[in-house]
Length: 242
Image (cartoon, rainbow, N blue to C red; front, top):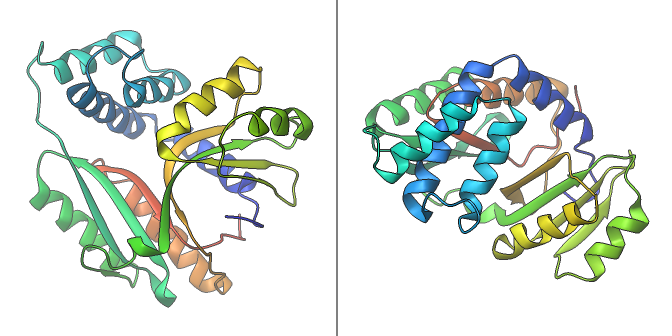
């Protein structure tokens, strides 16, 4: 991501999320359920659950809905059994796509994902076909209005991987996945709250496409994100059109 601004994309994604609250709730509920099952119902000792609950709060999800998802994950309430699945493939012009899913039916999910790839001129590939082009890391993105000096002060006192100031003034901090939550907490304790904070698959190198190809890839990514079973979609495309 170094050298390329993600600020406009983040604002675009937030607007899109606000327009699809129902779908967003479904995805967050599954994330809370799975993270609870894997790491327990106490968010203070389960960072993945804590992050999922933060997403729920940011989306104004009712507390009762959050609590029911935690109860399902802990076994206190009956619910579907979700598993994590990753699909990889290529969009037009060989753009790489990673699709992370939470599903209770792999047959249904792979059919839906394959359909969207085919619909927009892409191809669903085999495991590992594009993931080697990405790095698993924590990502914190701060708005252009946050003090760079303050961000650097926290970053220098913790083991961050990289700090990059973009052309629009936004600042991206990358971390190891294992240290993401500690570093995120350190920034928040310094009253530096990121606009985006999550563990991602970050492309090692981005590609720039023609406007027509970029439009096709954006439609593919958006359509994949609309699938209820899809948790997140990552691509190595540097989107320039907003």
